[in-house]
Image 1: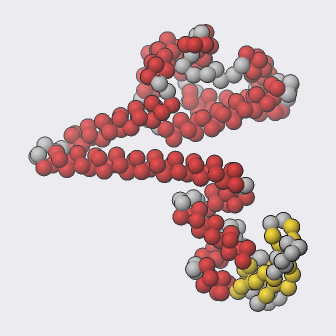
Image 2: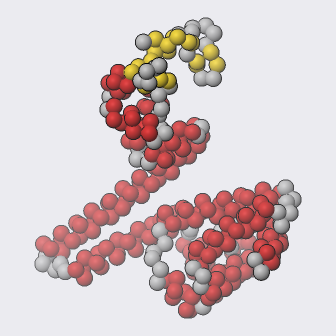
Image 3: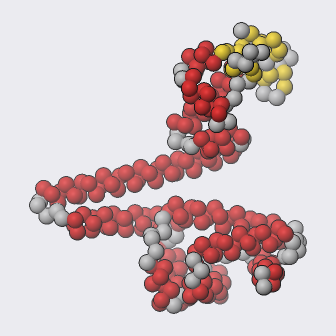
Length: 289
């Protein structure tokens, strides 16, 4: 069945070669795309791919453009994206898609490293079994050693040994021994945790910079929303513990007291941005009594 109007090329009509766009019934389209009819109905239900039109009797009709969209969906599905992530990718432009694919690649590489570590642990366990030295304590020890090696590897991607040493010194100077012990008893901080924190704090930092540059009122709804986000992230880290909260404040106080060349990382905010935040935080505290 042939389309009765002219097919668009991008957002404009091709004025030189106007070709009619073909439409397919769902069974024809499924066969052409090498997918099942059930899959097409499921994608329609989930809002991933709806038919371009329907016949007067209610039959689905798919176009060649729909075939291109379906190919994109199948490709992203093969790459390990969830349905929600695929929806987001289809809505976003090429630049955003490139960023998402890069992130997905990183995640897959981490999963591969995790699988490699499991295989390594299995290899070590097999050796222990062959040497008749295997028990649960030795297996646990093998796993701990491998996990420690992994932890060091990803930390070294973010910070040099010198930076790590300075940060450790700041921690020892800032947190009480009780607070340090509480933090140490938490589950291990992973690279995925670090990446998520970077994204969340990066969003807060970007908004603070924008508001400061625009000369926004610290009491404005936008500024207070940023402070609310900041306080939520702080609360997630401190878990409401007053000792850890006090140590965190002291850590940043000690950090900014260091000469620039000794700071283990670039300052998060400029002096102007810190002044803006101090005023916005004061308003936040006053509004909450």
